[in-house]
Length: 222
Length: 149
Image (cartoon, rainbow over all chains, first blue to last red; front, side, top):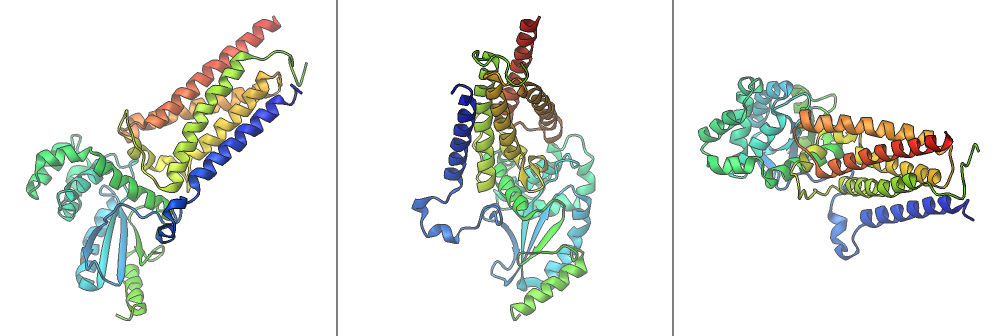
């Protein structure tokens, strides 16, 4: 009997572990029908709520961007995206999601934190623009925080609150939630765009993106 | 004895290793579940969990690294239990697995300290568990060797 005891113990632990995982992953019974409307975690993590939106919040076409403030390609794309936003105006809803690629971009995370900290004071897009417009200036800097505090002053933030929020839980949670969404959608590079939930894989360049937006507008009858 | 060393004696270092690996298994299952359900983590000791676990190093493709850790810890548990009950053939396998886990732990600590610049308490717990397992397996192998002499 003792010969089989280790096998019995191993099987018991395996069964216990599987039960724990099953209990943790199964939908909560008391959430009832509300759960049906919530996104499937692995395939559609919702991202930070509320998202950062520019354009018409009720537009029929949503352009969702996953970006890293220190990524050169994102910086190059920024003026193109502004052009696209002004071209489509009220017909487009632009959503920004944080996807800091910490390696190789050593300041990507603190830049995302700065944008989110500004967002807590209602000035996410002002900091977003400031970071992209000055990307070359801060990307190589050694002491990054004073530079971001200076940007915060320039856009009229309460800098004491900005400093508190920079490493605060609220900011960390938003970046984490956007990271979850990025993982669930398989976003591994920046910038990555989705037009009404469809990834712009081969069409990620401005003309391809315009084509996808036009198709989505046609489908919506606009 | 080739397949079983001394079936009537329990090897305590391996039994302790099995119990310690259950801590690592619980930690890794918790992290995996939080990842798969998209929940945020409450960090009570250090505040870098979300930064670490949303970094590109937290996944291999779409697979959470923590789930791989859970599989590794369960394997360590199984091999340790077998070794504790005298199944000697598991000892070299266990030593190789724990060596690989220890090296991975060092790499992950390096990433947290010098690349991500944040620490995650659950990852630090896992690092501590792997270090203890390494020490226990070293002790167990030395005890076994001295008995042979």
